[in-house]
Length: 250
Image (tube, rainbow, N blue to C red):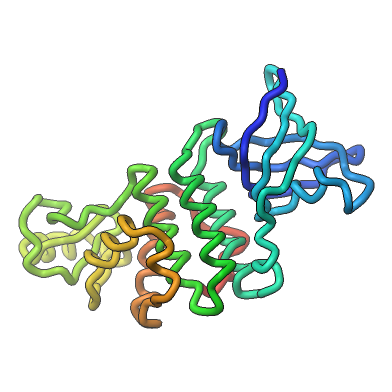
């Protein structure tokens, strides 16, 4: 069966006999693995559409058990990301993280839109790329139903008079009343003392479009702390850790 879809290449893998395997996040089918014959010329349109970061229209042959690429037409290459090392490693981290979040053939059209918006904003931004990446991570958690609880204490449901404690294991904020018991439980490595307004930052990242983030940046200390919390959160709740692109300094 011949079918078509928009997609973004997450990974390109060389296999045997001159074949390649593409991992593509498609708008219609979700994350899929697509086989293709190795292109003999860099001018081949399908070869251009097979590069990581590329946003393209793909014509696929779908059999019962696999997808194969018939052709690809580039919609946007995000070429400027590849010209800047910091942008490149930031985008690489986002793509690898996205691949880890997605199950095979589980469509996530809203996350797909967030990823294209993130890449577009990243391409235009000249520095301080960490804010965009953290915003994408928060939006991804929201779309996938794993957003931290910030409206009430995750242990008792009570009011948050003290907004300084965040439990990765519990999945959100901890009130003053519950904090002593949490500390007794031996959960300290996953409990963070938060000295910034994490509630409003997470809410802002969740609700606002990427266009709002293009000219703002988090304070370096805040960015570093939020990065650490979110990475631990992804590792604990989505079992995504030790990514190959983890060396990225976001």
